[in-house]
Image (tube, rainbow, N blue to C red):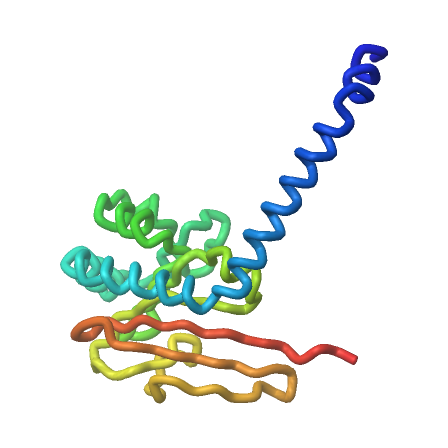
Length: 191
């Protein structure tokens, strides 16, 4: 124990310098991500859109599998048993690969025409709580609100929800029947 105290006393300047450097780096990364969030969002969108185009045949296979199954979800959480199937239990290489490639949380069958693929939250979600994004298959090949039950909508809209917050939603065509979506729910501060 005495050795440790002696070491700390001799190297207190170095320890303070290292701790200061770590704090500066962490704050710098946080500031960079916070002030460049829209650029990072665009990079995420570009990556997802390019991957959807590359993997379209595998994704269509999953869409057809979802249409055949009675359950609504293919989800990563084995604990959630309400009308759901853990993707690992399906024993499908294609589905396993798609979950890993896109870092999915859930594949949700809204109805027979619309199936959404929700991506795991990124660092953007930590900074912008309530931000969600992913892509969906729409057989009608028109924009739909994946959080509104798959109903047709404008490509971008916002609305106030029960005077508690604002909901913003945007969707963009990737290719035939495939769309990228992003949404944000911003709650008003409670006074």
